Length: 454
Ligand SMILES: Cc1ncc(COP(=O)(O)O)c(C=O)c1O
Image 1 (cartoon, rainbow, N blue to C red):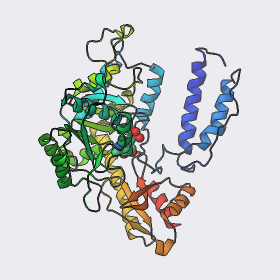
Image 2: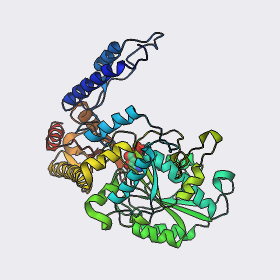
Image 3: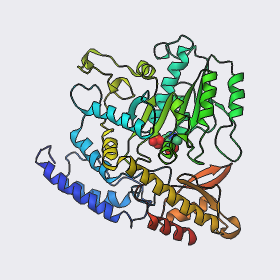
Image 4: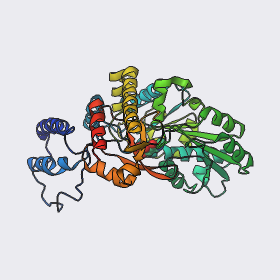
């Protein structure tokens, strides 16, 4: 096939057909694919025709995908791509803007407005600003960089310029997400460079008294506290208000990883489980989780844009631009950046606060319906009341004689649902995380039938 503008019509028609066929099949195909391996053996010297490529996609790629965009993929914390965001994401590719320097496109302004809308949606003060990232992990990397810069400042070290060698820092967390630990490694703190604070009983949230003791005992010149809202397994929220007060007292940076938990704020407001988050120095959230925009879309927010800029500033003669405001290239990891704010902008505009909130409510309701059934069933044990969108359970060994791993494998092999494992209070368990707009009561009934059929 040759590069040619006439191809656009053929491609548009094919896209429409692929879209329809994929979605028509989404409720009937097995939720998880068992196929692995490449579908084509060799890189061709001379390319194949578009028709041949499309046939290959239709026959070999599409049938072997997961139904992660459908209503019964309940592994990890997986959002679906809502219809408006899907459309906007196609346009992102069509427009192919590079949201880095600005001064030549409206794209940077739309990113700025969208960040402002997210702050408004979550009732965060306008002292927060930030940048769209590829996901919550990349946002957590920016957290580690910015907190590191803050820690250096207290010791008169500009870490970005001078490096970490002389930095003296204590980092505290109860149940950090694995991506936060990974980010601490990236930033040079080391994946083991943090102190575990005890959790409250039968819960993954931080014991505040234990944090106070650790902060008081810590001799390091700078301190960082990493809080969770919510934890990925227990959906437990740290008491952010109390932690913020301690951070103020001990001059510690407060980060809150609220990748999906921040959406609880749409249900219970500022005085719900995220109370105090507005006092954080930085916040991570994910739009490709509970806002249901396509991958890849996370957000880093901070009240210290000056520190973020110190970490990420890029200057080179060839990068000079007429943009007056700070450019995104100097606020994040990437120099060249996808217009990933656009599907979020379109989603917020098309569905509004109400539409987004209704979606969260529906997922929470369906998660509770599943939890209620499990609680009543003699085949399973519900391990924790479901207060958000994740349900933790295990098979009742007396009735099913299966380990959690065996039970989960059977359920996933049924093709009706996809679940992923976890650990609760040291025990292997099964997690069901509902965060897709497409999940409906029929999906819940189908999964219950699969659970009952084990
Ligand atoms: C609390 C929390 N933080 C960070 C992440 C990482 O998110 P991502 O996979 O978008 O990088 C997750 C993912 O589940 C999460 O639940």
